[in-house]
Image (cartoon, rainbow, N blue to C red; front, side):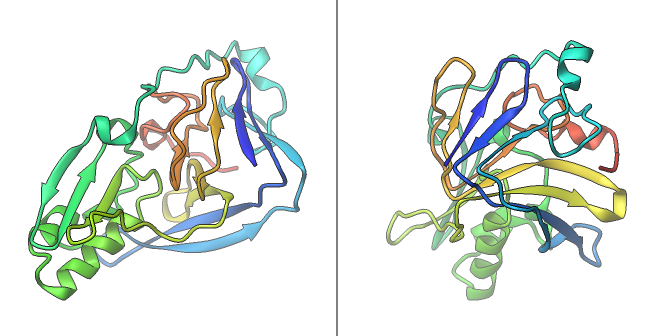
Amino acid sequence: MRIKVTKDGPYIVSGRVPLSVERVVIGSDGEPERWEKGSDYPERDTYALCRCGQSKQQPFCDGSHAKTGFDGTETARRGAYLENVEKTSGPTLDLTWSQELCSVARFCHRGAEAWAYTEHSDDPEARKTAVEEACDCPSGSLVAWDKKTGGALEPDFAQSVSLIERPPEGLIGPIWVKGGIPVESADGFVYEKRNRVTLCRCGRSGNKPFCDGRHLEFTSKE
């Protein structure tokens, strides 16, 4: 399984990668509370996902990138995640956050926020919530680390791709890549393989091919 970024064109997903919809469920405080599984697309050996945001056959490419002159130049840093993170330390957990990879999903803002829960992670409930919020972060910009083992506390994902939707706002979010599927740039560079990343599908990210949250500037429906 792999995802190939094409020059000023779509993402080519190969290896019969499952494709489905994941919806954000908003809690009583107005912040994302949990994920809800949506529909599955029929399995295909290979498919092309729109990267410019203009396709009339979403989520698939219909060639609109060529008509609109889409500039898909990749600008993302080509280093490891841990080379550019902010770290918060608590009694039993560490929390790392990468601003450049943040897709502004906002699961980390539920309740007292993931950073505050981490700082009070000697309390079992605070620790549990901090880990939940970190694991709900689709881009993996937020990661919880067990201080005893030094290991990352990651969700157990099968290799798959999900399309993020926020039904209350009619908002279409990024492409959520799960399970360590390799993402290869247009020039053949393979980005660091991670358990979860989000790829831009509105065409506006300043950190292509990854999402930087700019889809929040507008709403649209597939």
